[in-house]
Each structure stands twice: as structure tokens, then as C-alpha cells.
Image (cartoon, rainbow, N blue to C red; front, side, top):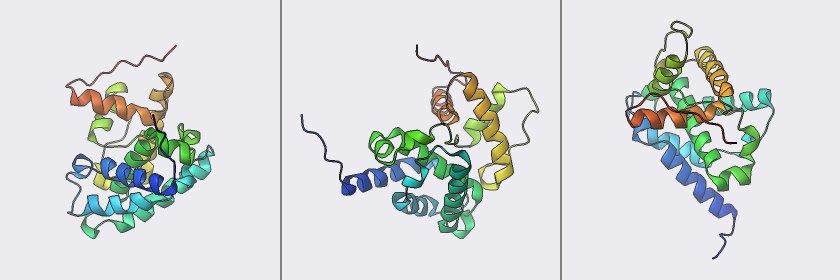
Length: 192
């Protein structure tokens, strides 16, 4: 068995692939303008990932916000929104974290507890199903999502995930997959 040499060229290729997979048709459907997927993929394919390999919460949040604004600026004007950019960035960062080569190369495991859950109708519906009615403010939709509402939903996701011994980024993996199989409930069983 041959081991793949981990060259910068290989890492770049893996990142381009991760960007293409993360920003698929489902991720941008109904977000307002043609060209969003291509613009987001182009940005994410070359976005520096090393800055996200940290465990400092304040610094991570600052870098995430900076990257969100930069990504939003690259989107077509009719589809440009903070919420769309944040969703696509969070999907990409999650997928980069799930990709062993990118995770190891950029030390993304340091930030596992800091990665956000991508917010969309599926994750929001699942999140609200876990909480008492009225606990979260009205969901404005991805296109109209702003930082303050995102923070409210992220804090709720973190609390639910913590009770299950998970980082909040992993809730999307359970909920999105579960909803695709016709079920809104997933079992969470921490490994022994």
C-alpha cells in the first residue's frame, strides 16, 4: 500500500474538492440569484484555513465573522447576504473538519468545539423541535439571517449538543441525515 505524499499541491486539491462538495445545489437553492454556488466555491477553494485551527473562542469568532463578510462580498449582488455567506462558510468548515487531510494539515481539530452548526430550514426545524415552544425568536430564513439571530440559534444548538456530549457542528450531521430519511429524531449515543 502506498502512502499519499501530503504536498501543498495535494492539500490545495483537497480544499478545492471540499469547496465544490460543500456548496452543492441544496445549499444554495432559493437563495436569490444565479452564480452564488460558483462564487462561493471560488472563494472557499482558496480561503486560508490555517486561521481556523485555533481553540481561542474570541479569536475564532472574529476570524469567522471576517471570512463571512469577505465571502458575502464575493456573492452576486442579488444573492449577497450575511446569512447565505455564513451558512455556506459553516458547511465548508464542517466539511473541511470532516476531511482528514485538511483537518490534520490545518489542525482544525483544535476548533471542533467552536465550529458553528450550519443554519437552514432543516436544522432550525430540528432545533425548535428540541426546545419548548417560543424559546427561540422567529426564523427569518437564511437570506435574511443576521448575526444576532444566528448567535441566539448557535447558543441553543451548543446547549443541546453539550447535553449529548457533542460539539454543535455535529448536530447538522444527525439532523440533516435524519430528515432525509423521513425522521426528525435521531438517537445520540456517546461512545463508551
